Amino acid sequence: MSIAAGRLLVHIDRARQATEKKDKQEVLAQINKGQTLVNIIEKAEPDYTIKTTIKDGDLVYEDESKVKPAFVSIYSELDQISLEGPIAAAKREAAKGANLTGAPVIKDVSLFDTQIKLDVALAKDHLEVARTPLWNREIWIREIGLYRPFRKTE
Image (cartoon, rainbow, N blue to C red; front, side):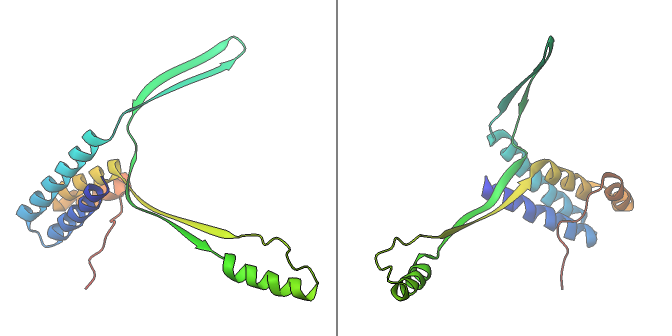
């Protein structure tokens, strides 16, 4: 799914660039490719059932709904940096001066988690913005609060 999500962003950007060039055929081609990827992502993502029950005395609230994940991972990485070596050496040096040789060395490890996720519903909205005719596209962007995810740089 991460490849499909990444390609979806590419097609949204290409559609917006084609819109700026007023190339209607390219806009529609990119939008159709993007919409195909949205459909693939939506069909492939599993449904989850969420059941909610809240009680307070005799009052009971119950609800059940089926939902799909709102986000698709584009990139995920977990880095582990070990500081064991430098810390162990520093502690051994400190222990030598204090006659504490053989003292246990505490191991320190840092973890860094990096994730990039795509909001599929927002991506669908961006496809619709790209499909909107040029004369009212900017009005619609302001009205629904969408901002361009990419800007062409030259």
